[in-house]
Length: 169
Image (cartoon, rainbow, N blue to C red; front, side, top):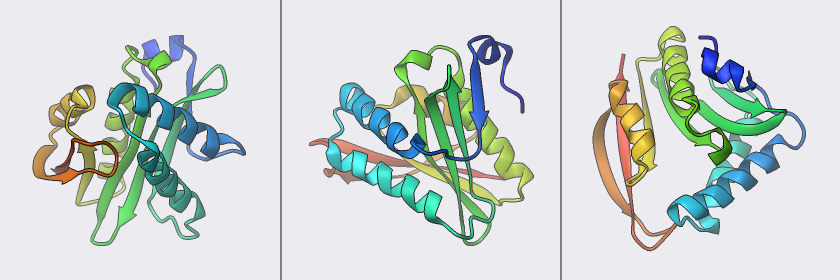
């Protein structure tokens, strides 16, 4: 699916591979923004760095894929699809920089990831997020994801609750 007219007019571009410097920059802005927005600590930043690093170092990515968006050449968004056994995909590291909010970029990233998973033949996909990320959770449920599990997490901040959403194809 092509970028929307609004995203194109804002100068958003998308790539499916990392270039030198992308990993560090993505994790840096992700960590700082999630501290400001949600109070997440450095452990959350390290967790995100591990996800992205494992993705990049995977010598056999199969159907795994990344979307890195930019404005004026600077990363402003991401979403990862990680292939798991049993034709299952996990959506990870959905991120939209504050400078790109209000353009529909987050929705576009999730819609594109869902479209890709359907076309790539996955039977289902899921994601973990944290309660309180209302914009993202609204996007997930509007696309048919259902809440299937919750669990406490005290690693990233004092009072966090992880939530799992699943989508069957």
